[in-house]
Image 1 (cartoon, rainbow, N blue to C red):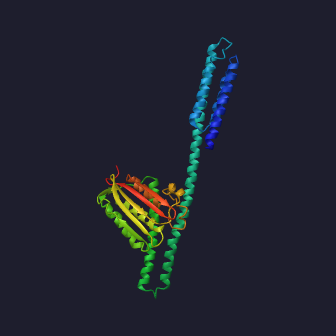
Image 2 (image 1 turned 30 degrees about the horizontal axis):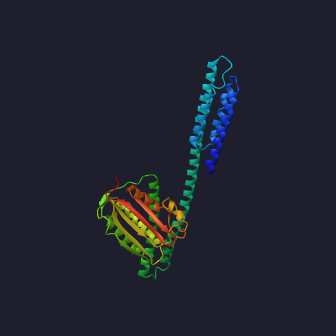
Image 3 (image 1 turned 90 degrees about the vertical axis):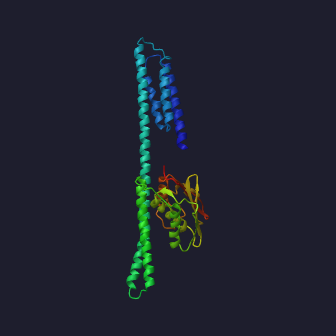
Length: 348
């Protein structure tokens, strides 16, 4: 708003300068070519007018006043050709100056955008380094701790204890692998290097399998699902969609309290398979919702939960590649609902 106000103020100032120079121009009865070049001053002042239409208006008004000045201050000398030539030269000078101002403003905007992108890239890099160092530290600590315990009690450890600690190590390794895959997917997505491998498969079975995988590991939560309304024949990339629903279900469980229920439903509407995943978790603050699918962004109330901040970005990327969309409705303290729409016949 401030830039617009300043731009309008400078616009009216340039018009006032144009009019003042015009009256000076017509008040001089002699063929004074320098007066014609005074019209450059308002054009240069147009540099501070941010709107390109207003800049062009300033240049246009200057040229019109120069042309009008050809007729009002009748030259006292007889060399009319020189007088007109001076006016034409003034017009071209104003035009060239206007073009220079235009490209100078464009260059300033380009440099400003580049600086903003560089700042965003630096902030993203810092967030990425911080995320990676934190997310890798936890599973590595678990692996190191479990391995140390196995060494210390190797002579008295029971088979059940071995299995428990081995599973803990495997879980930590899986967590690190998922993190690495997420980062790689994110990098490929930002470089538009994700390739769809389309095939026809049982989509309802894919979503059902994703629910079963979560049931096996999320034994402190309940997963209620009904995917009978989803198509059993769908054209898509099953590997990418497996990542999509594994991620959405993992998030639904991670951000929900123990003993709560995650509900999964599905149906077909207007040629799209629609899957809804509802949790009763912490929810997402309203001010964070517009940024929720940006890479490395995490909601302000999610800092106490592990996560890389790339999962939802990849989810949205994969769904868009299929010609679909994902939406979210959320309320802090009451949970979130993610809705995925995917074309049954595949992307067009």
